[in-house]
Amino acid sequence: MNTEAEETGRDESAAQDAAQAAEPSPAAQPSPAAPGDGLIPDHEATVRPEWIDYNGHMNEAFYVLVFGHATDAMMIDTGMGQKYREESGCSLYTAEAHVRYLREVSEGAELNVRTRILGVDAKKVRLVLEMRAKGRKDPVATSELLMIHVDQGAGRAAPFPDAVRERFASLTEKAPSWAGSSIGPVPKS
Image 1: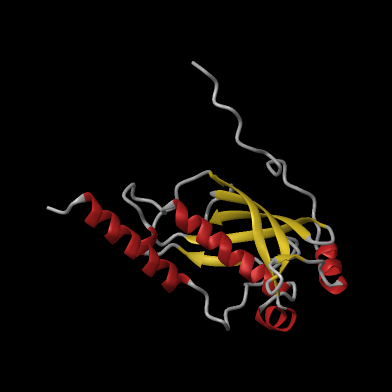
Image 2 (image 1 turned 60 degrees about the horizontal axis):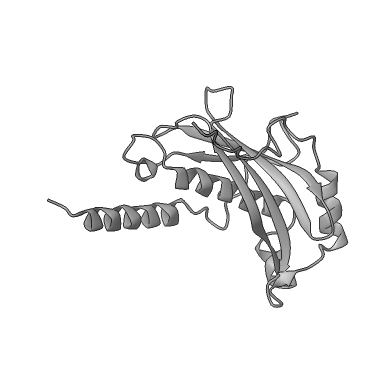
């Protein structure tokens, strides 16, 4: 019989292995958006067996992993990929995130993540991501992010170069109705 510590260690090890296996290759490119779907190409992923938890559906950590890969793809598409990071010493850091888990997702499900820029200023960009499973109209999860442009050498926020800020501004879309919501208080019984 396995102890709880052994089970936890095995679960953590499996999750680490799955996260490493799921990392996109450097040559991976986001899939092109269908006409009218959005200004940033969609990101696609397939739910792997090791992403399934003890409840029989995708573990919450892997929703965030897929959203993270979609954010990486957005950075590439907006000119903030590896070359930008190497040359500028800057990158985007997530300062705040709000994830909503709306529907269960099963092994083998084909996922599509749409990314929308909602606003940008000198050092920050706000975006939302909607994850859908093939064959489903409504999102299975959403994520809203506030990201900061950081000078990694200085360890602090830095202004976007004009070209990057202007690119984000040109990609800005209307916020979906759910954006900006927060977790409400739990009523006392």
